[in-house]
Each structure stands twice: as structure tokens, then as C-alpha cells.
Length: 324
Image (tube, rainbow, N blue to C red; front, side, top):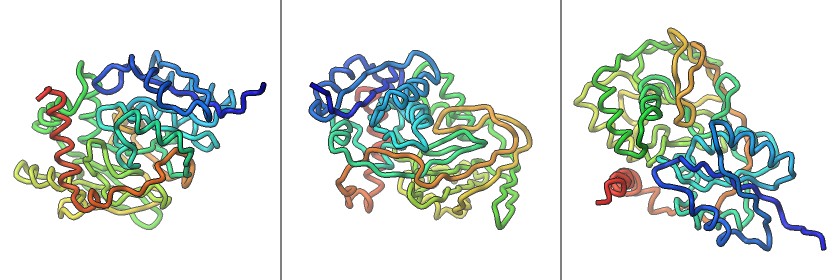
């Protein structure tokens, strides 16, 4: 008898986030609807292995591929799936889970897998920098430096990220950048230039609070140099979806831009540090990635009480890491 079930591949990054993934195959097996889906579970073994496995899934006729990990793992899987009809399923298990949070995908693996069972998909935007895809955010400046130091750390989690941010802030020097779009050129000494396809870095830190993945546009946030006195206020605005209202911030939307830097150096792409050329050409690819999404509307309460949904989620993440 022919097996008419849809084929899925689940790609698990065993070292993403702060907890082990040994139990994940069992969670997938008992949560996925086996009447609809035949699931092949794979573990990544090295950098970019998730992309290789996702290409294998496409060639094998899979209906969807589940990325089980953080934003870096999602980037590797989605990089293979973009501009195809194979759907991306997100099972967030990373340190920040920015894309999952933006898309209202639950952080509980069981609840995230339940979304796959509903078979509801939509075509959303992705972006690229010098041809390299990203799905959440990319950026240059201070956040790129912190992502590099965070990647080199022996521990993951919000405490480590906060430690790296504080130590690097004390010695960081902003650079002058030129930002070119179709209708203007902006030259600024900037602390951070962030380009958002989605709204946040992760842990509900909203660097591009108005960003949409269905408008064909990149939300560009330019943070000018600021004093230590401004730090607390900027932190509050970051976690309450009001960063774009700060007078130290320039923000705009565009479908395409080029950032000219003094020299080739690190930037971050979906939170991962990457060495890139001095000139960065960034563009949005409208509707280029198919993603499993919940049929339910986001909790309206959270849209209007972001201090609870944002700042306290970060605090709770730290508490969980400390087992408080």
C-alpha cells in the first residue's frame, strides 16, 4: 500500500541555545501528526551542515523542513529553502529566538510542532547582504562586535551576552558610514546600523519595532553615538517597542540599500558574526520564503503591554539560566 503522507525532515542543532537536544527526537515523534507526515530526523555535525541537509530534503521531495535550534540554525536551513515551495518549520531552541518571537511561534517545542500539524503556511520576505541571505536581522557596528565575542564564549545565554555587551561598550569607538538608497545618501558616525526583516534581535529586544515580513521593505535603524547616561533609557525603549522614538535614532524603510564602511570587517547576519567586504549591498526579496505559521491571531494584550512581554521575558531568561 502506497504511503501518501507528506515528507518532512527535522534538522536538529545539538549545540544551539543553553540546553541539550537529546530528548528532541522523542518530542517530535510523540507530537507530530503521523497520519499526515513521515518525518526523517537528522542532527547537524558541523557548521553549514543544516544547509546541506535541507538541500537533501528538497531533492528528496520533502514538503517541509523543521529547523530545531536558534536563529543561526534557522538561517542555515532557510538559506536552502528560499525561493522554493518547501516550507520552513521553526522549533525555537536558541538563546534569543528572534524570528520565532516575531512570528508568534511558541517557545515550547510541543506547541511549535503543533503549528506544523495544522499545515498552515504563508510566503514571507527574506533579505540578503552581498547575496548572503538573512531572515531576521543583520547589522554593523557595536552589535556585530558583540555577536563575535558572544560566538567565541564558552557559554551561551542572556547573561553571557550582557557581559560581552558591557565589557565591549566601555572600549568601543563608533565609525563613519555612508548609507546609499535609491533616493538619498546619508553619512553618519554610527554606533549601530541594523537592518531588520523582522522586528527584533531576540529575547524581545526590538531593534526595528515596526518591521513586517510582508511589506517588501527593510527597516533600517541607525543608532548614533550616545553617552552612558542614555544607556538605561535606550534599554527601556529597546524592550518596549519604542526605540524608533528616541532622538538618537534615525530609522527609515527601503527595499534596497548599500552601506559603505571604512574597511572590510565583521558584521552579524541573524546574530552570527561573518567577515564581509567594506561595501554591503542589502536587498529585500518579497515573499521568497514559505513558513509554517499559526492560524491564531497574536495575543492583542501583548501588543499593548510590551514592557511585560519584552523586558520581563529577558529578565526571566536570566533567572532561568541562574536557576533562580
